[in-house]
Image (cartoon, rainbow, N blue to C red; front, side):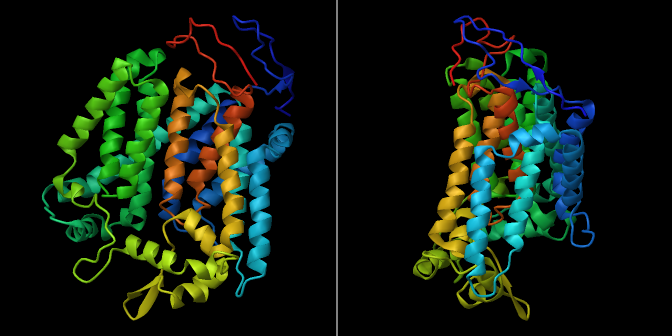
Length: 447
């Protein structure tokens, strides 16, 4: 069994406080196999929408099943210490409450709840494997590697086509996007690919700010630029918002007064402006006003949901009822050929409220609050915590852009945070690492 615990070294800081914080037992260092499992799980994640499912199960289902089998067999004691983390306790409560509300609704269907439970299990496995900085580094490199290969695909698929196109408004830009990507395999989930590129750019940018990576600062900045440009090619407004806000949060945590951070950010901004095709910017607008007698899809869904608020705010209509009857009858379906296509509301909080009312929403907000409370203090002290902060901000914003609150992206990110807080920063405060701009300053540990 590889998870036989050993006692922490009782090293002390300049103020005399123990870096061990509580009297806990450390976990063994992660093996190369475990680091590879984390890396490959992230690198293969975009393929879940493109590799054919087997018996209704995606490639990520098999990967997370392998993670679960490894954790159960090789790391049972570590699993026993992580399953009752506050984030997971809040998730269990949400599952129970949503299942009860779904049971009381007409046409109950538990598929979304089961997927969310699987997501929680996946996050638990990631938290068990992310026991030290080596594992966290491997995961962060996985974000960068994933964004790079997705960006290469997007560049080779649509950049040349977009470069030769012009658009004057949102509708024309949307048609151009369909021409560039719609009839190609990547069009299956083009917004999701843009989000993956944005996350990789955020991680590369955070790592480039570290004094410990001076020799890699230029390559990391180049990777961040390449992935950030790739995130704009699908013309996704959500990915653009994720990039802008996440980069701003990373800069704020690191310190706006740091000249190198502002220089790198300026270079990234100029690179985007110069290289991104002009047609992309025509789609970076949002309006609830109808154009050519038709309101854009996202605005129509939001407007319909707000107009129907009194019908679902108390107990919801049930997920099964929404996807099989209520959604069709209340304006959430659009004509597609001879049939109608039903769409979620592109907002997890709003979709959960429609499904299970204000009680379901409050339980989900409890999960978000627990995640927020898990974020360690002083994230700007080292590059790993800074990159992790950017990832968490990005997935928080992504929640507001998708109705799939059970997405695998959430599973991996939350698992990294819980694992890092549990094993790497158990005191809840990021300590300065050797080579950082804080390394010579005394650190006061607090619990």
